[in-house]
Length: 439
Image (cartoon, rainbow, N blue to C red; front, side, top):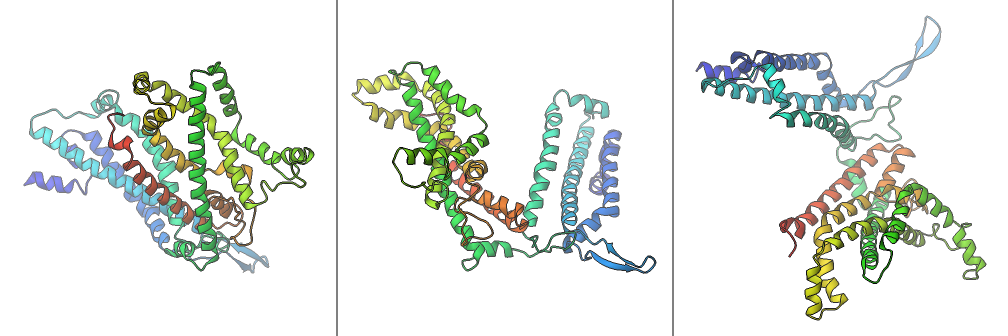
């Protein structure tokens, strides 16, 4: 009966069971953490959570100071800081509650060992164990803390921002923003709003761009690797090195140079006119269709060497006996590619293709440094262009128009699309269904 009382009390007094069963320092650490959290909630945590409900109600303003005879600025609430402090309080609460549950589990384990007549480690023995059998906890502690601070909290902050009206008209500290529920999602996904008439075409182009950029580089790199690795080609290492050199140049430099070359007065247009192929400059970047083809082709030029190197390594690992058996059976190059090379390549590179496709959906550099989303159109909302992807439009919404709520909403939609596509495609791939190998 007493055992059950202590066990129940350990949910309220953290570390109680540890203290009772000889792990005094460990139990006091759990208890001090509980007390510190309670003090934190009394001093500021509870206020942070309460303000999170309203995101502030006191506006910044001007009040007349009768003593000096002038108007003075009086500070108001800052919705941005209120949201941030609220997120920090939520994350701290979740972490502390997890530690509290761990303290109860640790106390029960200490109780069970004591009842079984086994030894309970003291504090120094627990510390020493972190360099031996419990070293995994020591090694994981830093990444977990970094994940919470630099990933979880910013991600939660962005997600919550999508449910506010934090736009150019609600900029703290001069003005406050408030919760609006799912209004931003309805606005983006509805059919009658100008935002929706921008979102759906940009989403469509993002999907087209993602598949085109991924599979042109994939098949182009595969063909190039097969050509270089074929028996009739000499100086294979030299050709691979040439393509590696193109990877050594920072991508944004290459893109900016190519953007200049494709301009109205760029070298391509100048040479085409001098050689008599055209009488006027071609709209490589000023016409929507031309610009979209241009970014796909330029991305192909930049991305093919990466795929070529990866495919070259895979081709070297395909058993030669498969090709020898195919030749004996009378198979030609095309048949061997369809029956051996491509199935093997597809099996091995499926995870790479999925990750590369998702990264191309969010390929900010190629679009922004080559076209900056242009050409612009009045049909789109606030500076969005015909080559803008969702990620570049998101950037413009934050940088140019301060529509942080819409940018956060688009970020969530991008994540949902990417997650659903990744889960469906990878779960149906042979790389997951047949992990034992290719046959």
